[in-house]
Length: 112
Length: 117
Image 1: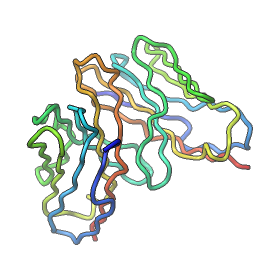
Image 2: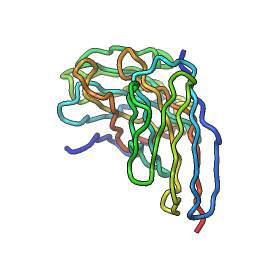
Image 3: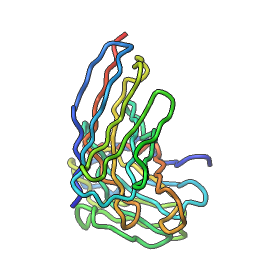
């Protein structure tokens, strides 16, 4: 059974810092890995999707990497802004079907 | 519509009552998923539909929970004899189905917040 873990559970940084959120998974036989953002009381917004054959994906100030062999993914946020404050969730998709297994999330607070 | 639509956005009910939550996926998406999210935790898988059939219902916690998707589009999650522990946000997602050469990206609705008193 796939297990996804995110470290740290919470993170507070001053505005402007570069930061890294970590995600690890136990079963390397994944179809893809997705990073989501969730604002309080809201649904999930997809940020980046890395297919199993890819090593990384970039969107603006966000960069996500994937290392299947070690069961790890990282989300790098450059020049953090207060508007980046949210919970960030990673989720691995199984090979069979597209069911996602989520980590517990990292609650990020960027202080002005 | 342009995105996944879920209704109601909020539902308050009493213990023992029956509840239905509705999900309208993105047009053309054959795969539909229900997840449940408790406060401070990541979403947990409940059930996955490919077309009209439930391809995987291994996440349903017990037989009080049931979901249908009779025409392969809108889905309804049904909860019988609700308990306080059922209180959570129920999230629906859709995607292009497996085997269609898609990336497998899921698109989520805003969720239905269920509170059982």
